[in-house]
Every structure is written in structure tokens, then in C-alpha cells.
Amino acid sequence: MPSKLSSVELHGLEGFLVDIEVDRRRSNPKFIIVGLPDAAVQEAKERVTSAIKNSDFDFPRGKVVVNLAPADLRKAGPRYDLPMALGILAMMKYVSAECFKETIVIGELALNGQVRPVNGVLSSVEFAREQGFKKIVLPKENAMEAALIPGVKIIPVQTLREAVMHLDNRLSALDIQRPVIKDEFDIRTDMASIKGQAQAKRALEIAAAGGHNILLYGAPGAGKTMMARALSGILPAMTLGEMLEVSKIYSVAGLLPKNQPLITRRPFRTIHHTASAMSIVGGGNMPGPGEISLTHRGVLFMDEIAEFPRGVLEVLRQPMEDRLITVSRVRGTCTYPCQFTLVAAMNPCPCGYRNIENTKHICNCSAIDIQRYEKRLSGPLLDRIDMFIRVNPVDHIKLTAVSESESSETIRKRVNEARQAQIRRLQKTKAECNAEMSNDDVGEHCPLGPGTKQLITQAIEQWELSARSYFRVLKLARTIADLEKTEKIREAHIAEALQYRNKIL
Image 1 (cartoon, rainbow, N blue to C red):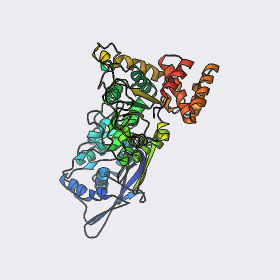
Image 2: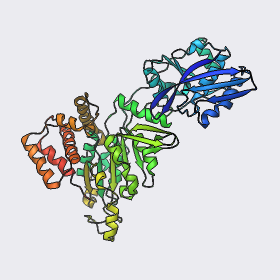
Image 3: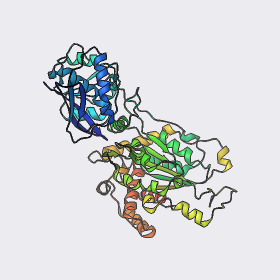
Image 4: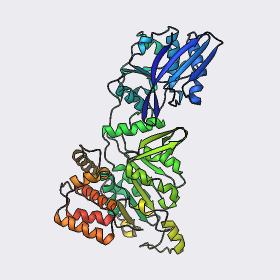
């Protein structure tokens, strides 16, 4: 009598129900897996056979056939080891087939019958709940991660024999403590330790509060990288929904910390200018998340952005606008979220000293070199950046003076208050912050009075702002008003937002 149980296949963050059907025939001993399995699934034959025998169960004689349905869906990874083994044991009457009702099983097997953790558990459990399943049998090391999704009974197991005992009600599942959610932030560099640069620090505060993209432009040693790193200490606290979104991506990528299955701190990732386009947007045989997805709800820092190949930079254009990236490869197509804040830094020329104040260095770059350097950043990419900040070297008086700047903790309180105001205002929309507002949201939440409308109209005519730039100015002004705890956008807010839109290149 064939046995049947269910598991979950993941393509990106999207789950698909997979039925594992096991049957045997009187024939020469053989183990066959069908249903578009990849190499890792095919190799499960040896793992499953050894795990069953080393767990003191009899492996069936004759021909064993395992079908992974639907047959036209590609199956990848070792997550089917445990369900295939349990399906074989159910066929051999070691466990009742009734145990598998409303139950999902996932897990990798070692040769000795130990159950090893797998990736993508968070998305798998959420999918199982949506499909109406009540229980999920999975590796013990994945239990805390799975417990983040309420409404599903988690049965963590360490061995194949333990899984059989749980399903046979001979062993009770232990209670799993859900992770404690803490408001964590990462002060790599405190804002108080940055000398001078008041305008740049103000711009970083606005960027953190509203999720706006920013370009820092200035000479080497002026503090661009230091300020970008200080941004991580003033980022607003994450909501529970944002934590789960980010954690699912890290779970699929296999990057969740073992001792902390919930990402509670906004990602801050730095990529080098030698990074490939695939590493940034994602890829692989079965497309995995790239840097822009791993930075979802966080900050992507691109130092020396003009050193990146232009082709690599151009792949950012669509994700920055759509906040999604669809990665297509031969073996499949996956879509990942990528709502990130871009913080970029660059020099004014290859040598770094063109038109720089407070320095004795002389620029020796030719006009062709400068033109080639600036052309790395295309007009459409620059149009997606909200703020352009010139960072000049700090003079020796400010550099040696005792700093009285605000600390990151003080600035972060203001940023948190501004972000909470945005969440309340945008709770009926898909946006979480001002930078994510659609054009319709801007029309509703950024009303302009006669004075502000006249000011921005003059700017459009004088600077020839594009439609995209117009809406970005309004979003920026909305964030500036939120930092001042005012619901009305005033002329001063528009003027400051326009000041940051004054493109340097």
C-alpha cells in the first residue's frame, strides 16, 4: 500500500506544496526518485537508506519508488530526506499514515539518522499555515525560527527515530520559547565623534528618518565613509512585519544566526566596487537573493561608487524604483523584495582633489579622465537619488576643537519619532516610510499651500526637474516636516529639500 505525506518546495520566498508518494514493487533491489529532482535530491537515496538502517529499522526489499508531485515542479536541496524516510517507514507500517494528516515534514538526514537543519524554514512554515496545515515536523535547530509563525504546532526532532515516536504519540513535543524582540541598534561610529560636517549629518538624519537615497561627494579623507558608517547608529527601529520580511530572506539564503533566528536590526551592508552584477541582484543555479535583497529594509553603502563599472550600476535602476527584483535563470525565476536606502560616496575626480576647498593638493586629472569618471553614473540613476551632499575637508580649527555634536542616541530618538509618525499616516497604504510613498500617496499626504506650490513651481522651471524629481522633493519635504513634528509642509521644508536636490555632477 503506497504512503503519502506533504512537504514544501521554495522558489525564492514563494512556497509550493509537494506530495511525497512512496511505493514498492517485487523486483530487484532499487531506489528510484522521480518528479524533477536535482542532484541533492537524487543523492538522498544514500542518506535515506543509511539513516533508516542505522536507526534500527528495516529497509524494504525490492524496488522502492518515491514520487515528488507535482512532477513538473523542480525540487531542490536536502529538505526531502526526512519526509522520504518517513514515507518509507509508513509504507513498512512503522508509523501510521494517519499521522501525516494536516502535517508538513522537512529536514535533512545524516547517515546515522540525525536530522540536520535546512534553509528557508520561516517561509515554509508561513506557507504551511496559509495552506491550512496544523503541524510541521522539522529539525530541532530550526525550531526557534519556525516558532516565529503563530498558529502552527512545531514538532522539533533530532533523529529519525525521534520523529517516528513523535508521530506515533509516544513522545511529546517540548514547548518552544519564541525569541525575545529587542530594540537593537548598531553604533559603529557615533555621530558625536564626527568633527564639523553639520550639513552632511543633517542630511543623514533626514535619510534615516524617511528612507531617502543620498550621495556624499567630496575629497579623500573628508569623512564620507565615516559618516556613512555612523548612519547605522541612527536608523529607526524595525516593526515586527519588517523583521519577519528580512528574516525570511536571510533564512532562504542560509544566513540567519543560529542563536538569533529573528533579524531585529536593520541591515547595513557594504559592497566593494569589484562586486559583480549577479552578486548585487542575485543569481545562481536556483536564483538566490543578492546584496540588494539582503539589505531589504536597511542601508546599502556603495563606497567609491564611480569606480563601479557602469553596467553594474545600471542594474540598480529598476530595483530602486520597483523595490522588487526578479532574477531569471535557466532553472527558474524568483522574485525578492529589495526596499533599501542607497548611501553612495565618491570623489570629484579620479585623483579626488578637483575644486576642493581647504586643501593644497592640485588636481592633475585631464578633462577626458574626469568626463569618463563622471559618466559612470548615468542620468537616470542620479535621478533616483534624493540628496546630493558636498563634503569638504574639515579645517584644523574644527578638527582640534572639543566636539559638542549630538550623539547618535539623541538623533535616533528624533528619527524614531518621525518614522512612527509616518507609519501612523501610511497605515492604510503599502508604504512603511515617506520614500516608499506612491504618487497617489504623495498627493494625499503632501498637500501644498499657495506659497509652497509657487516655490516648487519656480524650481521645476529653473532646474528643469523631472516628474520623478518633483515627487522626490515632496517626499523629502514631508520627512523634514516630520522631524519638526509638524503635519503641514512649509516653504522652509520645500527650500531645504530643493537644496539637497541640487545635483553636483
